[in-house]
Image 1: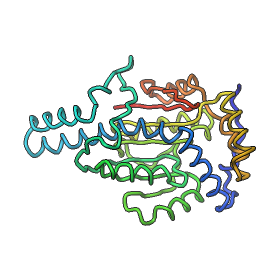
Image 2: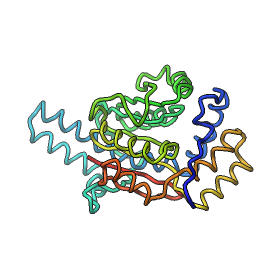
Image 3: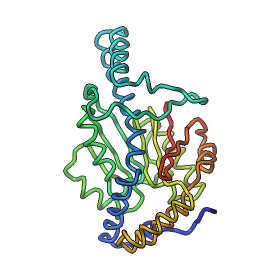
Length: 286
């Protein structure tokens, strides 16, 4: 199945705010219950714990010397299961890790800076901030989106959340210095971009991420397209979602194409993971 290059309605600035919010709410529900969000959080969890442990070790080194930091880091890594999840692939990057669940040990609260590229309604930052808070991780999350109406809606939804800031910015030309954020992530944005734009966005994400990054999206497949058409016919109510849902699958990349994008972006060491049902996760660890 060849990739489709027609634009989605969601990318048009003429879409009314109410319809935009309705469509994205339906997309959020699909991601929540059909695997999209769990895939993203699975890979983010690994990066978050890795970052929190390293930050805590650095603090102890400054206070008590290198030995204290190394000792504390070893203890935390063992307790959180990082040693079991540290298998390296052929390119030296760490594979995804399932973590030890909600009941796992809490790492001391250290500020972790995250960036969400193409944040939409900022659903992911809001859910992630809550998830991190329950696990004793203090975060600062910046969400950026190129769509002015998205930024308006997301800004209103996060107005009372001090840990989240929403800005208008182009993911293919991020207005941040190199290594500005510990972790960068993006969900369901890559398929909205043409090949050149997608590779530029991946390059920008890699540039501003200090510890690592995760980009998740749909995987183009005939069965995925059939599923989207069924959802459009029987479940979705928004005309925008009915139109864009199947088109999103047709615009998505395959795993092979995603690897080619990474090579074009200058980050061939990133790993492409395939997840059920028809999800891709592009992951890079520093």
